Amino acid sequence: MSKNDQPTINRRQLLAAAGGVAIIQTASGEQIQVADPAIPADPTKVPGSPATPVGTRSPFEQTQRRVFGGAISTTPLQDLHGSITPAGLHFERHHAGLPTIDPQNYELLIHGMVDRPMKFSLAELKRFPATTRICFIECSGNLPIWANAKTTPQSLAGLTSQSEWTGVKLATLFRETGIHPKASWFLAEGSDAAVMTRSIPVEKALDDAIIAYAQNGEAVRPAQGYPVRLLLPGWEGNTSVKWLRRMELSDRPFQTREETSKYSDPLKDGVVRQFSFVMDARSIITFPAYPVVLEPGWIEIRGLAWTGRGHITSVDISTDSGNSWQQAELQAPVLPKAHTRFRYLWKWDGSPTRIMSRALDETGYSQPTRAQLETARGAPQGPFAYHYNPITGWQIESDGTVLLAPGPG
Image 1 (cartoon, rainbow, N blue to C red):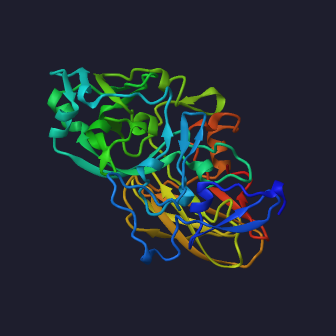
Image 2: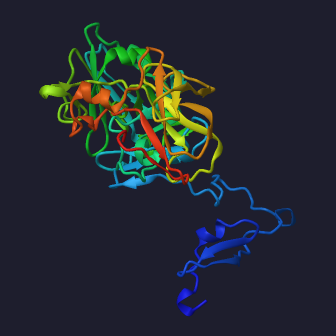
Image 3: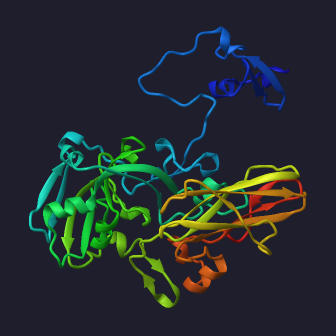
């Protein structure tokens, strides 16, 4: 090994080793073994680490979000298990950075077409009966960050995550303030520098809306709206306004910036669809996917499906480029408006093919093809900025390489 080939060893490489040995690579590509004294050869012979005030992940686990432009981070869907997204891996989307809000000074104002305009502190919100539910949140702009062959599930559809949320039912607060019978909309306003605002039908508030102050058993993380956010299960993520500070009741929508110039769906012939709140059924295969390399034999195809209209009732899998479809197994629990895991056992014979998934929900809605989306919305030069949910697939080459199939992304 020459002087120029001296290995560069960093902590991550060392901790990626097992049995006290790290495998590193020199500049010339040569692999060498280096002992790491921090990793005992026999952990039963050395006392372990003491307890800490806040638990951390194993240094061997390096799963991370990917950050784009400082305002977006995506969930590594391909690396997760079960249906709950760890709070630190929940996708992030904001328009003007994360505000810092002192929970001791926090207030939520409810006014407008109500009998009793009221302000609620965080402590007062927590005095109301709590409710908890598991549901997904998906950005309505959950489209590929880039759509080339080497796109991962994280970059393809990583703007969706799932948590257990706890808070007070919004219907409870509306009863406290005495909303007028003719109040049919309310404005939800955030405390961020963008002052994110959306008009929401009161019907949704009286159904399953939550004023959430906890996520996965702890306080809502700052990137998710600390200390309080609105949660509208099954609806596009931007309507679940974070850092919520004000709600105003009215008899009509407010036509804010975020529902006129933004978050509207251009269709064919110059028509624009507004207030398309509900997220339609969607699925994605998370294994096998890029950058996995397969060997012929039995493979369990795995993925996620979800819908804002209730339960996922089935997921179909095609292993022959869409010529035929077979039903996958849904992994319990299958909850409404929640991520549902699916699996399908398949024996790959080594021939090139394309694998795809499509979701069906309890309303009978079936995940569409891209061609069906284009028929409904027009050419893809821009209309697919929001609510983009076509059937997607992965191309498996004869050498086992898995790439994003052309067309769906």
